[in-house]
Length: 427
Ligand code: AMP
Image (cartoon, rainbow, N blue to C red):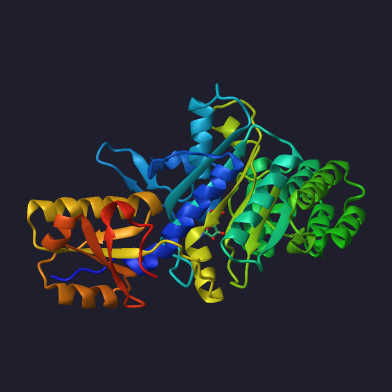
């Protein structure tokens, strides 16, 4: 019998996995630079965790099943809900604000296509316990920094603020679950459906929402225009002012203002957003990352009123964008194959020392050749596999406490005392 991965699932062989793993490393480095602590989250969560606030589209595409204990569970389609659950139930005593970070695989039954998979990877950052504009600005700057570090210098942000829409609908007494549905349809660009929900409310609400949707552009132009449209709606104006404050802080923290594109008709699929929302793009037409403020999720999960904001980076898509943009990392470590000539105790011990020296000081990739092949075959294997060095350990060498090291690019071969590895590698 022959097996293939299930539709939408991927086997990532070393070359494909490497790109993603580098991004795991990069996102961890970012977390540590900004003081975010990593948490490890369960892959399976209860269905109810996502039923209330994940938004129609995501909810419909969850991998839902009943486990052997009869519980209705899902393979997580996103991770913010898990973080909010943990904060609400287990981290109330921690000093605020909390900065949490995670790397997760997620599952959504989307139609597979370029940059869209049924299992994919995200790195997420959540800043919990601060309702200030400065907190949202930190996240936007941080995401921008990530993209810089990933070599995607052409990235830009699409920014909106569902607090404005919610405030408008609030004025007209639209209940929260209907607000969620309206925003869900706006996210999918199904304005007809959104307007259908609002058909029992005054036409004025529909007019101001559709008018607002055409307001987009750079920071200066947009605020003037939006201000004019919202001038009669004080609560919405306060939210708009908040958006302006967030973006001003983001620029102060170092985000070039030309990277910020505001779209007042922008909504996101997840229903828990209450304030600023943003997505990051590069030359790829699909979003590389997205996030926003979700001030009510923690209280919904039984915690106190606790403001929170965060974002997640779609690592598979960032990798795709890097490949297409030809981004290459400078790889400062090298790869060495350690080959045994003879296997008596002294040889194996010396090879162990050589491997430890190579791996230890410089974190080089040092691989022990465990196959019983001739030295000549080992050299041709090393050359085909792109090894930088071959280190030969034999009886003759073991007697002298040296190893023979050959630089595979230059062909230069020298004998080096094992304790001088890796400093004395031949050029
Ligand atoms: P979301 O959790 O929907 O806010 O998405 C955040 C990011 O995850 C997006 O900007 C994408 O980069 C990535 N993403 C979402 N869905 C998929 C998918 N089906 N396949 C690959 N990446 C995805």
